[in-house]
Length: 113
Image 1: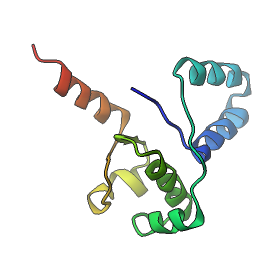
Image 2: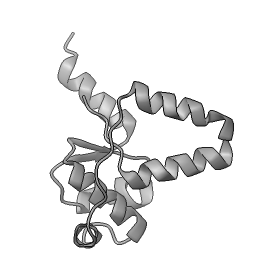
Image 3: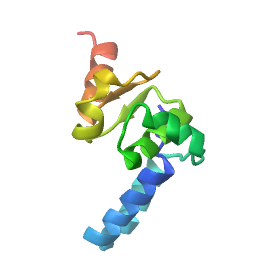
Image 4: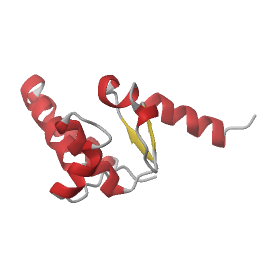
């Protein structure tokens, strides 16, 4: 399994940790390294505009464009308003869900008592 974080999400995580728990910045760096988290290139304006056809909120369209560029199997999010509630209306080549949804899928696929 490979963990990919888009540049926007990585920047937002860094900003939140710096603002809310700056002493945790070294831990964030350790977690990213331990998880061998990768980033992909920033999407083009055309790719962002294409993502806007799926998600109208521009900041989340950028995040979605980054995910599309990464070609994942799963897009993991807690964003209920723009992704989780709207996922039935979003047509993509990958699943959208919470971390719990992904873990449940692994359990269903790989654990057979």
